[in-house]
Image (cartoon, rainbow, N blue to C red; front, top):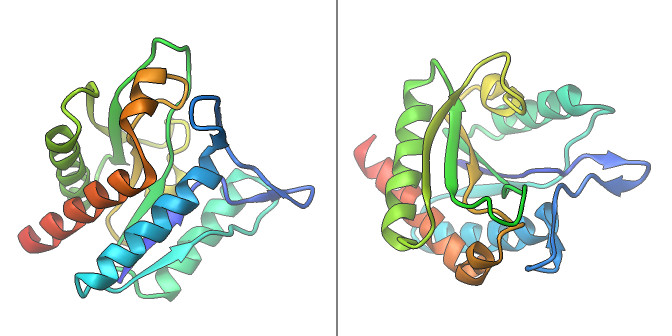
Length: 187
C-alpha cells in the first residue's frame, strides 16, 4: 500500500492551508497536487499497486497535523509514503529535490529513485539532490513521524516560469509512478 499524501491539507479557519501559490500554474500547492495525486493513484492502480490518497490532515498546528497524517498512513498499512509539494522562492530559484529522514535507509533509497527518474524525465530542470532532514530541519515532521519509508517531493519551483512550463500534473504523475515502481522492483 502506497500512501499518497497531499501537502498543505490542514484546515485553518475552515479553509485548507493550501501552501505556496504559483502564478505560472494559477494554483496553490494543494490544488495542483490533488490533481497529481489523483493521476498517480490511477497509474499505480493500473500497474497493480494499491495506493490511497491522504488529502485531509486534522490538527490545529503543523506538528499535530503531521501526527494525524502519520496515524492515517499507519492505519492504512502503507509500506511507503510520499508527500506532494512544490517549492517557491524568487523567480530565479529552480530545480528539484527529494527529502527524507536522515536515518531512514528506505527513505534515502526512495528519494534516490525519485531523483533518478526525475533527472531522466526532466533533464532541463536543475537537480538539487537527495537531502536528509533532521529534527532541526524545517518541515521534517512528515518524514520523521511516518512509520515506513517516507519522502517529501519538491519537483520544481512554482515561482519559476521555466520550471512551470516544463511541468504538468500528468507528466509529474507519470514520473512519480515510474519512480515508485522502480523502488518497489529494487526493494
